[in-house]
Image (cartoon, rainbow, N blue to C red; front, side, top):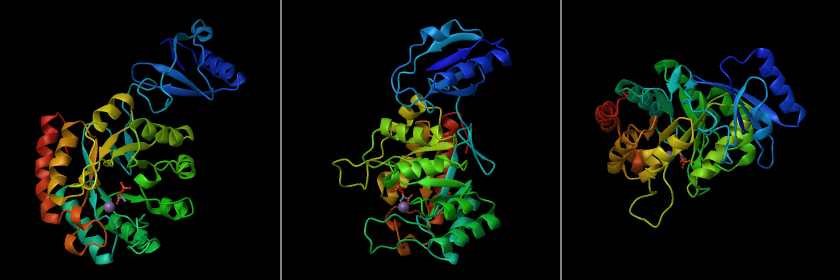
Length: 337
Ligand code: PEP
Ligand code: MN
């Protein structure tokens, strides 16, 4: 439930309301907004009756929140959330491009990729160090060494780093380096991992599970935010369908649906979303046209030599060319890169 406060509410009235909520075994969350201040209530297993709250001092209205996800919903917070990642705002007027290799493979590779994507205008560097691979015989990532190399490239280029955290055991190591902690599709419902990143304040990039509904994605985000970490960015990365010509089916519907239902920033991963190099650009453009706050794109200096996801990786020249196209689409929808 959401209690909307009167514009002239006093600090003492607000404090008394929060006390009352706590005394009923519930949890109050103050939500300052541009147009209104509100107090959200969680901790209730079933629906709460708003009636007894409506006439309390300082209260303008009490509204039942209809969705099971609350803290991440637009009902709860109509104002768009902007997540700051080492000074880069995600969810604001600028569309943010994150780019880099699927996996960090060597010092030379990640430096080349970092320099290349930075020159082309990317605002963040991606690169997996702990890789969740379908087969145990595939390249599993450089792990700690990969994190060190990412930090080196950040020092050189100034680009913040987004890298995946695969499990709670390696979270402390990854959290030391990552500016944005990626939770991969395979881990979207790893609830202990969601809780663990919810206890930190480092921004989280939460990718949609390959068979997860949008509601399940929002509930997974709710796990993180309800633990106290409000810095969550949602990511559509394609879902499993009957189609076999592409790796996944990028669900363009997800972008406007998530933007409508949630105040959290929404970005798109066209690389995994389609899985075919030639289609990554068109899908990235479509996502920006549909309202995505950013895109994350796999770029490798030599995709044919990539140890993971080479078939969907752009080389630096292809990425540089794509950036010009993305910029035009962003402008067409009233934004910029
Ligand atoms: C990745 O970003 O390289 C990755 C493994 O993504 P996903 O979890 O979306 O498959
Ligand atoms: Mn990948």
